[in-house]
Length: 361
Image (tube, rainbow, N blue to C red; front, top):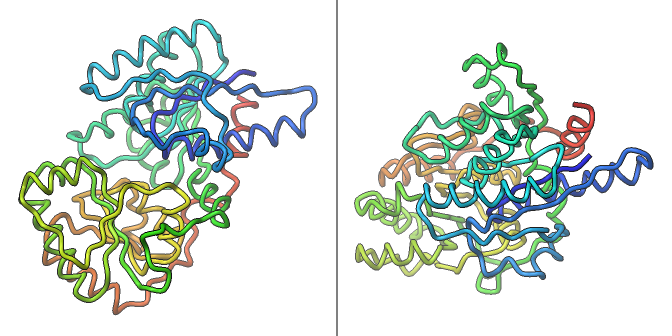
C-alpha cells in the first residue's frame, strides 16, 4: 500500500511524524504487508528553519517532494498546489492521500486526489469553529465532505459530523484521539530551553498571530494592553512572528518592557515553555490543546474555538480581545485550582490506530 502525505506547515510535519513512526512500527511487525509513505511538502508556510537539522531532530522523514508554493493569495496558492499535487499523484499512483488539519495544502491535496479517484484520509476531521469567515473553516468542511475516511480527534468532532448528517453519507468515521497528544508524549524528553528565557523565572506564555487580531488595530491594542497589565504581576514571554511585529509598529503599539518578545521558536523550545510556564494566552488552535497536555490553564483571545471540550471542562477560557475580560480571567485562573484529570484526546496510540485503519479499509 502506498500513501502520499500532504503537509504545508511545521505543525503538520509534527503530526505527520507521529503517523510516519507508526508506519515504521507497522512495517517492522509485518513482513508481508508493507506500507510505503511519500511526503509532499507544499511549501505553504515558508520557514527557513525547516532545515535538515529540523528533520533529524524531530525524527521526521524528509519530504520526497517540495513544491515551494508560498506567499500567494488563497486562490492562487490553492490553485497552484492543486496542479502540482495532481502531477505528483499521476506519477506515484498512491492508494491513499493523507491530509492534516485545515490549511490550503489540506484542501488542495484532498481535491487533487478526489478528482483522480484516489482515496482521501483526513486527520483532525470534524472540527468546527462555526465561523465561515475563517479560511480554515471552509477548508476543513470541504475536506471532510470529499474524504473517504475521517479521523476525529474528539467526541465533539464526532458529534459535529453526526449533526451535519454524516451518518447517512458513505464516509467511514474513526474517533482515534489526537496526534498532537502522541507527539507531546514522544517529544517531551527532548524539550529545550530558549536561550533568552531565564530558567528560574515564572512567566506566562503568549502567542498572537491570527489575522482577526493582528489586522485590527483596536483588537491588537486591547490584547497588548491586557498583556501589559498581566506583566505587572508576572513576566509575559511572547514568541512573535515578524508579520505581527510589523503590525505593532504600523499601529504604533509599544509592548511593555515586562513582555519579552522572542523570535519564533521551534517545537522543542515551545514544549519547554509549555512545561515551565504558569499559564497560556493565545489565539492559536493547536496551543490551546498543548496547554491542556501540559496541564496549564489557557486564555484564548478569540470569539470561538474548535476545541470546545476544553471550554466545557473549564481548563480553557474564551475572552475575545476584551482587555478587561482577559485580565479578569487571568486573575481567576491564578486564584483557582484547575482540574486537568479528564482524558479528552486519547491514550497516545493515535498514530497506530490511524495506520491500522488505513490498512484494513
